[in-house]
Length: 293
Image (cartoon, rainbow, N blue to C red):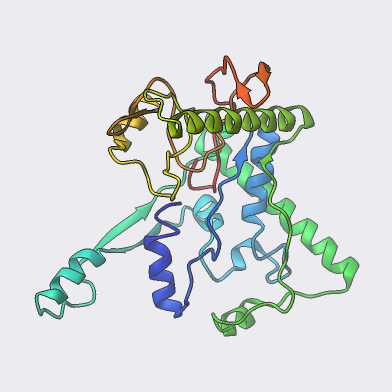
């Protein structure tokens, strides 16, 4: 998602002449629980793009990029990756490179949902087909009840990329996606514990204490917002955390370091704002889209 909201976002803006990124606000990844029902619901939400808004009748009718055709029809997701750094260097040298001189063919590989990983490719495809059928039937029933028709593929393609909706949808993003109240509350509690542990570690580091252990799952920042110097990101990913030192930070034990993950932890031992005996065990794996987990 870092590439999508930076490198690829700039390419999209270059094509559409947009003055902003794909997301105008900062991107936010929302944790999805390990419950099969929750994962299936997120997959359904993504596949329903274009149909649930009454823009097209069938999922495959959407004229833009869509995962359904790759998942159901084995359509390859292929494109070109443009190395703008090399292109910029060539222009600095006074060269005028051909359009595809620094382009590399790339193929996107879609991964199954964690709850479907044990299934055969044929069974996974059948699961996706069931979701698509469910999406189209529900949308057709809603349109009939409301007396509405779809905009249609031809009209969609006539829209200008700078056109904005008259009434944009505004709603609060949930902290987590879960199928049951029990799991949702556990994830929210884990996040609360994580924030308390992080704030405590940050306060201790600001007070001058070195060797502070930060909870896994959050980038360290100075008060001004810049990453601490000496942050060895590959080593942190390997060993799972960051420890404040005189030179910046160093890796410390167990887990996965990533930016903007909830990295929820189990704990029931809280004293004021201090989190004690935090069990470092992620409750879920995040799902951002059908293509990444």
